[in-house]
Figure 1: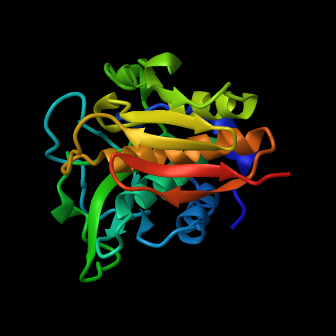
Figure 2: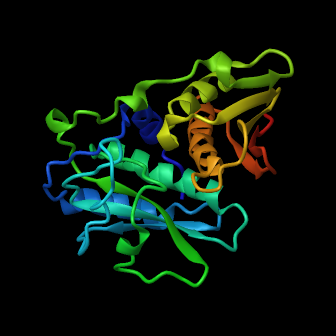
Length: 258
């Protein structure tokens, strides 16, 4: 499917992690639109998303700590990877954030949760394949902001652009500036913002900082930033494609020469 650039780019500054919900069911029309993205937006193999409209089990029950606790979410999304695909973590971040931004554009609230949920409580609706695993979930609904004492507080703290740039060969162009500012607003596990950027005249490469974290994948975080980067580039008319890279690099977005 074609990326709805304006719709998702405009949703970037509106997206904030929300953990307290009013419990009210979202209207079917909005859920149908979100379901379409979950089903149709799969530009790379290795991951898929399942929207659970009528949960039989609360997957958020038992999550410990005020930062991670989610209450009264009427629906949720499951982020499912195919572990035999090498880039499943990156792909999950990329397509998962697409669903998050679509939900935001629909006026709904969400929150990426990886590593701090009970995966055994998510095995409903659709059975998993032999190589599949649920690596994350997100509540879907309308936030109860007045009772969310923590909410998106940590979501607002952002590293400076200078802290995120590894190197640039020459002057950073305007399209690259727009792209990195969009990527800077991407969500990440415990707001660690592990992505780092290097530039050439026609490309941006995303890498992660420090050591590889197997439990809370920095490659997944960078997959999220990849979508933001591409949306920023496309917003100013630069189309291109991704090439996956080996650690600590994650992916390179090269624009099409005109």
